[in-house]
Image: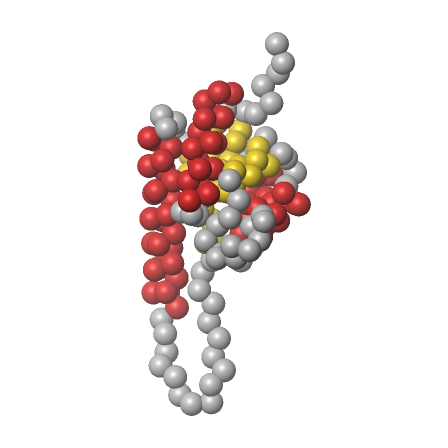
Length: 150
């Protein structure tokens, strides 16, 4: 009998249709291989620039950051719901980072994951690309196998 190739699987979720398929595929694979499953969602805090000579109203950055975190938490809750529907218990984590690709690749390396599962295209809207920029970046930089789900 061949050794189990996957004992720790991480799936990146952004709420897009392809990432929903990625979660379902990751759940199926985790069941098949008896692997631990981790679901992550990466978000970026809002950036602020002020380049106007006229007085501008001050924005409380903490409120915008909290709003972004709450929205990201809702996305991650959807992923957790999908894993439960698939009959899987998965650890979930919300990551704040400037680079989605770097965050996913580093998370997978730090957690010693054997496989990264990601959807083909996310929420970026670049529908002309054959492979989304995030999935392409993960494939290029990951330390382990990457399954891109379409």
